Image 1 (cartoon, rainbow over the protein chains, first blue to last red):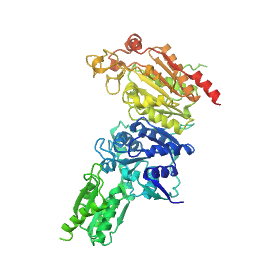
Image 2: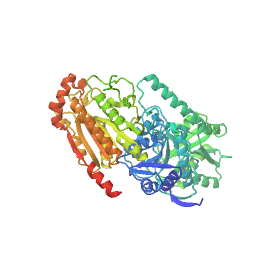
Image 3: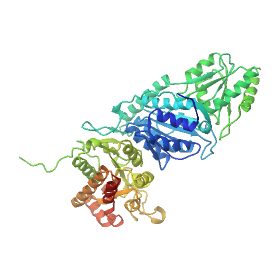
Image 4: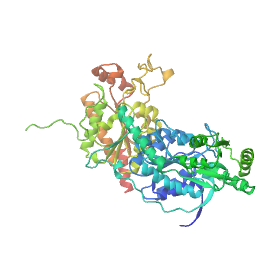
Length: 354
Length: 257
């Protein structure tokens, strides 16, 4: 497979189609408009491929729920305010155990915010976002290559656990062009018994989220919880960068992690022993993997393009075993690596060199 | 040998309806099931029940069904039909589901000309939640959220779904019926059959609006509820065929092929 240069939003689409996505519904919102535009052109070229420009985000998420029930691989995409609208359907898909991929190209918030890259939707993504006891699998790519690989992985994970999976990126990831190699996707494994395609001569089936009997509903919730436990145990992914001799660890994901890498390179040149822990799955959060670092490293700095959301997961993971500092740039502000390096250097001077 | 003249349609499960005495839902369920039997489409039919009194429709219809969040039935049904074009897909919706929270999904499914059928139960009230004002509540009608009667200045006017939707070019067949007398039930069944046939033939979007009694929330006897449909409701919502482009669609199909 050749290396090609593509913008992030296009990479997601191409990876999705190659992974067998045959149904896309979406509504325009910046900075992810290239996704519905690419899908409108390319998914229809594939046999059985369906594109619908929906009347709303709410319709889009319910369309992919319907097509997922019918047995197709499905995807929708949006940016922050639109993802808020989709929460009804995401909760419903989790309840009905319907697989599907939701892409959030985050922008500044809250409210309409702005169209600049941001990471303010971490809580919404990782806590479920909609109502009820459920979780969404959340993958946070940081490179063009990861946009491709994790989009394909999101379809596999969604099918494997019959649960919605989210690609959580931001306007920077979506708009930036990078080289990418599309790997061969794994063949789809999804049991036909979960599909709703007409009863034929057999027994009819139904898919529902409403369970009026509280004991039935409780059991369904525990069943989902047991599934989430398996995901939490088996699926966390993270990357470590320059961690061998690190005395301070930056914890950052997505675009923030890219900026952190740039900052760390600078700091290393100045002799500061700083490394990076980058969660790739945000839910499940690589909690054990982060905690295991605290036996030898005592200084952590969380950097997010928000006022501090993943920070809570880092605190839960480290359980008071290490000192945690935070630096944030919310609302669509994106620092340069040099700026972040200055912030880290100041903290480093005060803690490690003191 | 006795001749069987009346029996449970095969597309209905052996279950007792939970609907209140005198409610129109059980009649509507039954005639939809009879039509599915008569068209021999049980095995290829997928239904989408709403949030509302009919939320448990999957306990009664013996066809594949998927429950939609409130109002989203037509979005789901559109997608299922696009995914599986040779299946027969219908959504079953109440007035709150179709004309309030799901007006956008219903309107745009109709406007796209999705080849699906909507069975729309208009009983002028939110039934399941206990009789609140619906978009189709009559002016002056008392409900739990219009205790002094629906006031046009405060609450607006009854939404005429059939009149509005018939203006959309994506709609092929649209009829408003009633289930308040045996003759009207027969008429309604014919309309439903025509709508399903329209879909099977690939002619596009069909919607059957059914004026349906809700004695419990109207606080009337079953008999008076049927009378009220004749005397009050059908004056605001006159029955009839609002759109029939089936013939034109047939001609277009011939030209295309």
